[in-house]
Amino acid sequence: MNAPVVIVGTGLAGYNLAREFRKLDSETPLLLITADDGRSYSKPMLSTGFGKNKEADGLSMATPEAMAAQLNAQVRIHTRISGIDAGHKQLWIGEEAVPYRDLVLAWGAQTVQVPVEGDAQDAIFPINDLEDYARFRTAAAGKRRVLILGAGLIGCEFANDLIAGGFEVDMVAPCEQVMPTLLHPAAAAAVQAGLESLGARLHLGPVLTRLQRTADGLQAHLSDASVIACDVVVSAIGLRPRIDMAAAAGLQVNRGIEVDRHLKTSHANIYALGDCAEVEGLSLLYVMPLMNCARALAQTLAGNPTAVSYGAMPITVKTPVCPLVVSPVPRGYEGVWTVEGQGADIKALCRDAEGNLLGYALTGEAVREKLALNKELPALLA
Ligand SMILES: Cc1cc2nc3c(=O)[nH]c(=O)nc-3n(C[C@H](O)[C@H](O)[C@H](O)COP(=O)(O)OP(=O)(O)OC[C@H]3O[C@@H](n4cnc5c(N)ncnc54)[C@H](O)[C@@H]3O)c2cc1C
Image (cartoon, rainbow, N blue to C red; front, side, top):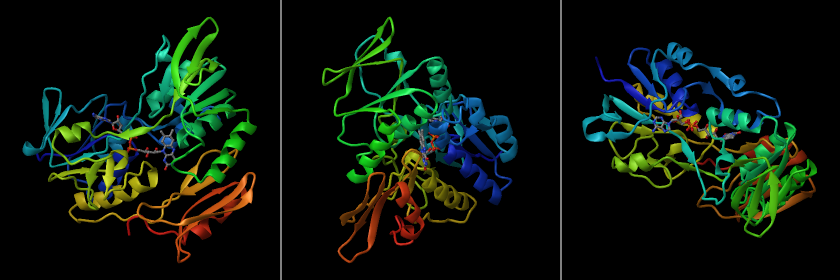
């Protein structure tokens, strides 16, 4: 039998690539391998699940068996790749060698962990896939107080959602504002005020140093000597593209696995897309870029080499208490920010010396202007 196209990972990147590929090629053997349970789900739904009172099963859209049938593919679940032998076009699952015609790495990003002292480290839950979400829901059942570590996009979304789900929320993050790498301070202040209006308590500046069990739940000790009582902790302090195994196989890596516009790594017949990939220097851990990559790479794998392009890619943040759309200034551009509006309705625009729009942050009522502004934004990968 011909060696299959092998896709490692069944997240949005892996399954969407497989779908796009099957539109073009119904014959070539296709093998998907995943460390998780292989259910198809939309990861952005993880941070709206409590408000909608959805169990993990309710967020799952298809079983791996249904996906295998739909894609005319083999789907191997709970199977972890342990190495890549690029020279022999095979990968390793423990002792088992699996040959490939083309190999696609769609194995995502891993949650950043920080060391914390105390006897309650097992009460800290990262939520980066459906199984994490299920574990956290079980741990949070019957509890009232959640401490969120991190005030980035995902931390803020979980704060809004957990409050909508009936929890009390404290947030701890070593920064001066929410979403510090993404947001103009005026927009960040609007989001913070929105979360606080729901009852969230933000502790910006310190970090968690010790988590201790007490008779009444948990005590979180912060680096500024304050102590927060809580029942369970969500860790949302960041994601790091998985690069170690690629680097060990000799592939070029930077923040992510380096690929060109054909999603090709530094090695023949090995490609990458999704959260693990850095496309021409862009490491964008969002859905829209990976969908563009899936369409382009499917063409390439089907024999029609196609470069990916990115238009502007604004991000809609799921904090309904303060609607927010943000389009960060692309690297290499410099401009000046102007801010209009006040309170919850902020329009922060960044323009270059010629008046061209480079990026924006819109909150509240100003979000309505996004469609008009999007037309002015520069493409990220023209
Ligand atoms: C809570 C949350 C909310 C989000 N909301 C939004 C949003 O609103 N909008 C947006 O654009 N983006 C959002 N994102 C980001 C977006 O969901 C991700 O960019 C996207 O889902 C990444 O998909 P992926 O397939 O690259 O990675 P993943 O979904 O992480 O999939 C990785 C796959 O690789 C497998 N794998 C890993 N290692 C191995 C191995 N060694 N062997 C075999 N398999 C392996 C895993 O089991 C998994 O199947 C959100 C992210 C989170 C965490």
